[in-house]
Each structure stands twice: as C-alpha cells, then as structure tokens.
Amino acid sequence: MPEHPSRLLVLVAAVALATVVVAGCAAGPPAAGSPVGAVGFLDAVIAQSPLEDGLALVTLPASMSGSNLLVAVAMGDGPGPGEVNAEAQHTHLIDSAGHLWNQREHHIVFGSIIDVYTAPANGREQGSTLSSELIIKGGDEGHCLTVLAYRNGRFHSTTSRNGNFGIPQLVQDAPAGADVLTAFGDGRENTPATPVTGFRPLNILPVDGGPRGDRDLYQLNRLDPPGSWPGGGMLTGNLAPQASGYWGLVNINITPAS
Image 1 (cartoon, rainbow, N blue to C red):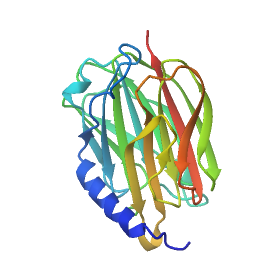
Image 2 (spheres, rainbow, N blue to C red):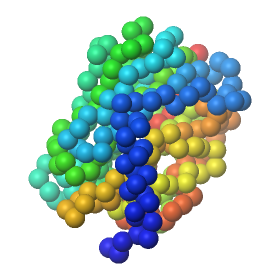
Image 3 (cartoon, helix red, strand yellow):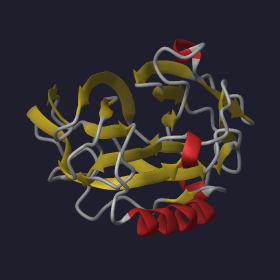
Image 4 (tube, rainbow, N blue to C red):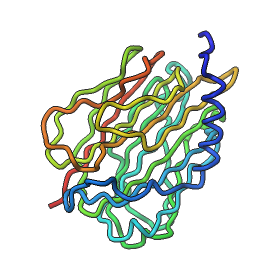
C-alpha cells in the first residue's frame, strides 16, 4: 500500500521508545483521583522487543510489594493466515519468582497475537524478572509485554472483537469499580492510536518489518483513573486514526476482590 506520509517520524519514535523501555520502566503511581480501596492498582512496568527474536523483559519494582494479583499482557507478530503454523503462535512467559500464571486469553489478529495472563502474588515480587518470548520467530517485527499489579484485584473477564478497516471500537458491559485494559493490534498501520475518552495509552509499540514484513501497531490502553468505572455499558477502543487493515481489540476487566 502507499507509504504513510508520517512513516519516518513514526519509525524514529518507535526506535527511541524501544530503546528506553526494552529493559522495563515504571509507569508511575496511580493517577490522581483513584478511589481508595477498590481494585487497588499499584503500578505497571512495560518492555518492548523491536524484533520477534528478542525477549521483552521487565523487573518488578518495590511498588508492587503487597499486591494480590498480577496481570501480564503480551502482544506480538506471527505468521499470517494461510502460512505454516499460523495458529500455533504463542507467547511464553519466563518468571524468576515462580508465579503461577494462568492464560486468560489467546487472541489472534491476522497472525498477530494478544495473550493475557494473570497470577496470584506470592510475596516475592520486588526485584523478580518476567520476560515474554514468541514461540515462532520471524525476526522482522516486534512484541511487547506489560505487567500490572493490584492490591485488591480479581480477574473478571475478557471481551474481544476483530475487524477490517474503520474505527476499532468495542462496547461491553463492565461492572462498577472495574479497571479496564484495552489491548489493540493493527496488522497494517503503525500510527499510534488515540484511545476513547476515559482511557490513556500505557504501552505503544509501532513496528516496521521492512520490505518483507508488515507495519504493525501494538498498543495497550487503560482506564484512567484505575477502577473508576461506575458500571454499565462502556465504549472502548480508539477515536483515531482510521485502521488501515486487519485489527483486533481485547478488553481485560479487573474487579475488586472484596
């Protein structure tokens, strides 16, 4: 397809962002106005691998001590539909602290994947490392990992939708007090997306596979402030830009444990 006029700027931003966060970085304290109690969001760390062959590695900070729930979202590229083993692409988590991870969602978007995992905290969070690795390695496009910690969180559900072109959006019913994460993958356009009102970007990875690869975008947005949803129908996804091809959305809903 024709080159996007902002392609060079996007690629420069992608390289700079991947360099900064490939070893993991704290997302900062909960946003001002976060309700006390509720899900008790503590912190998030992110990592990116600009290549499928690399690891996306994070080190869990001291701010995650005292958590009861960890959530990991891994997104990356895989063989396209019709290619050998397209349905076999998965991520593999390596955890130095031995958390018991449970895969909650394995979502395929035109060969790319969105994998969602949760694990109960075990008291050994501080300083432990968690990495994501793709099973099938093409080497031309990257993947990313986000790990979040909650003091009073419980996995509730996931919802998902795939589409072609248009504005990627999904309406779901979310319970009161829920914290909602929206994972977005676009298999043809790597311009970072503008999330719908009430959400903010947390992890953005625009990649370019070069002459033999696709231009993909992996982006994780989250409700701001965390756990502030009053309940009922919720619009998730993006306001812009128009998706250029195959895209997918996965919502991860975390509710108060008590």
